[in-house]
Length: 251
Image (tube, rainbow, N blue to C red; front, top):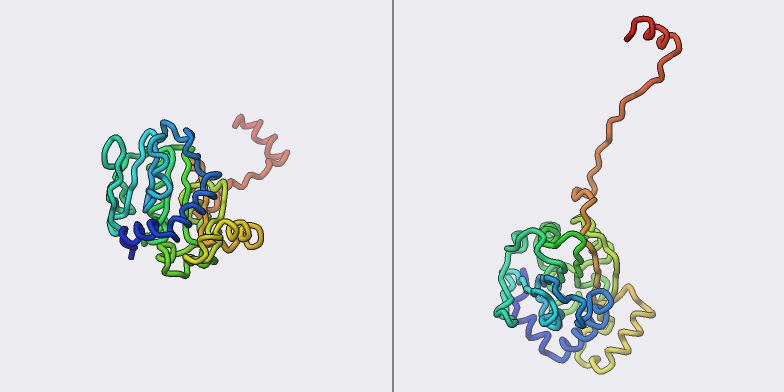
């Protein structure tokens, strides 16, 4: 069962949530274009609860839409064009095929019942060579084991599991990063920067979150794990005697 959007919003309004957002954005910038024009004219989709990370692109992107799962609920977000938030079903996104240049997922993959179906839909609405960035809880980190944040809800992932979900949906992972090495404690927000640098250097595998960037590829079979043998004709070279006989009959 998904978390209620009100619970997620309250977390990001808290001191711990503000610190978490800052630490995530610090690692997100190398993976996702910065808000200095890199997304100018591009169509961007955020699936899950993405406002804390994507609202800074509101004035740059050609279009920005927040698709929030119906069992999570939605909070209204506005741009010059009006409301940019909509409620959606995980497995039936209300967008035409190849509608977006970039897709960002946060608080969206861990709580879905069928991750493969969701990834197929995200692949469908992304344009060829488009990029997707996923933010997911790390199974080996402390944040996936705590109720102090929304990252403790749903199914956390290892890097290998997240990579398998992506490749199974014809995405090609191109870059990885980790964030939130600090324990999920409000008392440690003042030294979060130092804890992040320490964690990145000493124990990079134990981040609270995994960030991955991937591109949409068109040349792989979606049925990963299933193989079939190719039947090859058994060609036997003709003997000299048979060759001579064939020449006599004119065959």
